[in-house]
Length: 298
Image (cartoon, rainbow, N blue to C red; front, top):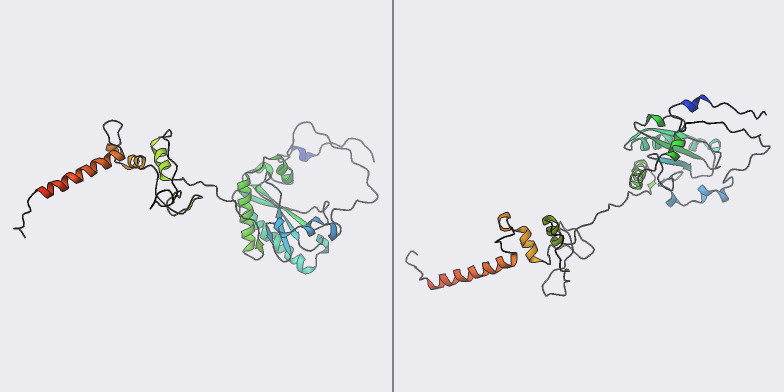
């Protein structure tokens, strides 16, 4: 065969072609007499046959769906595999019919994801002997990714966030499980942190970052004290059961006082207000004791 350099094909000028600049076509190697064996020609050494169900996002009696090891550039890339060690042309009629159903079902599940316009379905089969069908989601609005080069763009584009990737996996697995099988992909855990106590909330709302807060005492430090360290609404934190008690009464009183009582000059703190209230109560009680009681009205 002639080794004359081949001309660059017209598709190199397509908008969907991922590369630009000066390109040249590789020399075509001479054909070999015997093709090498594919990976997993026998079920004993087949990676798919020996993979546990936990390596997949959804499994059934005859089919399994797996994802990549990590997020890639496309919203979703999945592989549909038969549980039996068969190639496409070896499928019996039952599995052949089910392959059509599974292909449509998985395409619909992926297309239901937010931001997905089309799902490309591919089967190459030169790398592994075990039947596997590729499903690649094209992002909505990305017209440059249309067509046959989508798998190349998947390796070029920056990877999507892992949290989004895991949410998409869980969505597809749950969608497939509506028709049978078992979903194995779970959505990511929600990352949240509840405030340790109301004192820190009050300090944050007042901008008192420099206030030193005393550590919350345990239930055994002071007789009658309730355990602390839990957010409102019954949410339990790592420190104990639900409780609304705080450790700095004066700061909370300052935070909960009316606006006219929280000025910086001539205003009483929570402790001073408690003292004044107690003194007023004693004076009122003494005044009532000294005053004669008029019972004639009764």
